[in-house]
Amino acid sequence: IVDISVRFEIAEMPDTDWQIHQEKISERGKYILKTGLWSDCKFIVSNAQNKKEFKAHKLILSMSSPVFEKMFQNGFNESDSDINIVDIQPEAFGAMLNYIYADDIKIQSFDQACELCYIANKYMMPNLLKHCTSYIWKDVNYTNA
Image (cartoon, rainbow, N blue to C red; front, side):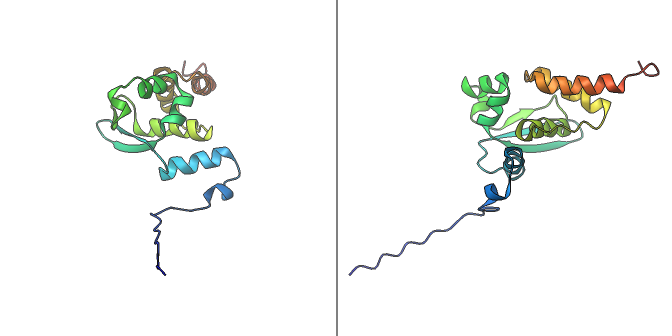
């Protein structure tokens, strides 16, 4: 008789049944964005004052933007390493990711709306652009036009 014992160790998994507790797909999207679970790319977004890293998923980004799809598909340098972004504010990039993963956008200011318009154009995301321009038009009136 041979005694074979197998030991399994589970790496730090935040919550092994998180899918059950997240009723909507948007909640699951927020969860994997927040935890970085199964991420396969990393963005380093920086400006003069701020630097932040975001873990993301090529498939989800590619589903949301033809620019991301081409970036990951065509063997750009970005397909295999960290992706450096220097022309976008980290907070606005995070808001874009939240929109992609959870279909949720909370625009807090005119400046943020303008930054998100830039992002929406850069990554060819027309629905995000609609949200931003709608916010801008609501914010514009005869006293500030």
